[in-house]
Amino acid sequence: MQSEHTTGATLLLDALESYGVTHLFGNPGTTELPIMRAVADSNLAYVLGLHEDIAVGMAGGYASARRYQAHHDQSITPLGVVNLHVAPGLAHGLGNVQNASWSGAPLLVTAGNHSTDFQHEEPILSGELAGMVDEYCKLSAEISDVSNVPTMVRRAVKTALTPPTGPVFLGLPMDVMSAETRDTPERLGAIPAPGRGDKSQIDAAATALESGDDPVIVLGDRVARAGPGAIEAAVRLAEATGSAVYSEMNTCEVNFPPDHEQWVSYLTPDPDMGRAAFDADSLVFVGCTSNTPYIPYDEPYVPSEATIVGIDVDDADIAKNDPADVVVIGNLESVMREIADSVEVSEQRRRSRRQDISDRRSEAASFLGVAAETPSDGNISKELLAEYIADVAPDGFLVNESNTSKFALLSRFQPGPEQFLSNKNGGLGYSLPATVGAAVAHREDGDDRPIVGFIGDGSYLYYPQSLYSAARYDLDLTVVVPNNRNYRILKDGMLDIYGGVDDDYEYVGMDFDTAVDLAANAESHGASGYRAEGAADLSETLSAAVDADDPAVVDVPVRD
Image (cartoon, rainbow, N blue to C red; front, side):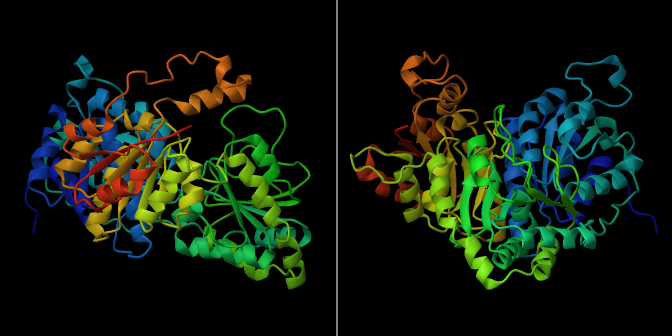
């Protein structure tokens, strides 16, 4: 019996629903009307963003939060899906497509396009969509015929979810989405998984960890993305070898329990901190993608005489900037467990190796720029703010985009695994909408933990209208803005590159001399606005915002 006639747009949405997709984020235009018409008759929940980059950021935060949930419930498909409007809309969303790519967020990015038989006239809004976004996507294509919809959608979803996860793109011409068809969705099938790794290289890694006197393990964010089992395997490997453990530079997830005795520190993208951390005779880099400083450097930060072991799910990021002596490509959890089971290091030797970890921890603290003591002068420091957030929302799910306050938050709050996300790429404007997307994911999962966006004032001002979406869909979240009223990271960069002190420079375009009333701004978008006037009322203000059931923004003036 033949299936009934349907349209390409309905077939697309039917396929997504059959794969477990429940939400579609977007900002529509005329070329998306076939999709919007089909959405009205589907079971998908549409989440409107007032700018395409907001829609992409929401989908990215949703996908990353759903991935954590999928680690505990295999029925969950951790995919964010977003629909944008032809060339300008895709261009608007490109910044957060790049951010999502660096963050490994599994996204299906779609955009409507002019009909295939009309594109040759180059009407307004035209552009080569697949080429525009190709650099930041694992797959980038346009569906040219309605008969291709089942295969192309299945292929795109499979590709986005295959480790290393990331965005994919499909262009959706208006005539293809409007065309009639009797086709049905293809089944998704199994998602490819990394293998166990080459046994000879696993043995070589074990030998390298046996022979060194002071091995160091550096964990990248692909460990957290691989799930709790991978984090447990990292603990097992560290304990079996007595190794000191660091994060990669610019880590944006929690890859190791921060209260473990062998944990040393998160790493800043500072080559000097890297040199201190990597001063070892054996270095094991696991799932690292951003282990590079922000600015050029003269002296290597990875010692050439060390034995380097690289472990990852594919070969693109292994030994990318420094050669490796041992390379293992495979499932991070199983590879680390097998090395841990194979390595033979006596308890006496493990104890000897652990003796230096306290000194390493003290040395690392000197690079983080986090004050050892919290001042009691009535002003709000970044450290004090982080402590109060930890007091008010100790089990909160944190989404960070405050570059100069990040390490204060990590040091004083100490979030555990699956409790922290951050913008790995650094392009501002990702994490505020990602906070909204994470709130959508947590409500869907029935998780009532507080959702806390920790968003610097410069980042907040990119897309404050993200709060409109939070209010429109009645999401319970709190955005805390450590407000120093300037782009402090640019000033710090000036000092790092050119030397000197603040008084030596006229900082052009780096101060918000006419301050924005962030609380009033939040209220204009339908959220509640709060302002902490000083340390005395900080706890009460934060508590009121977190305890409220609606989206709230807390403006917190902080001292640099």
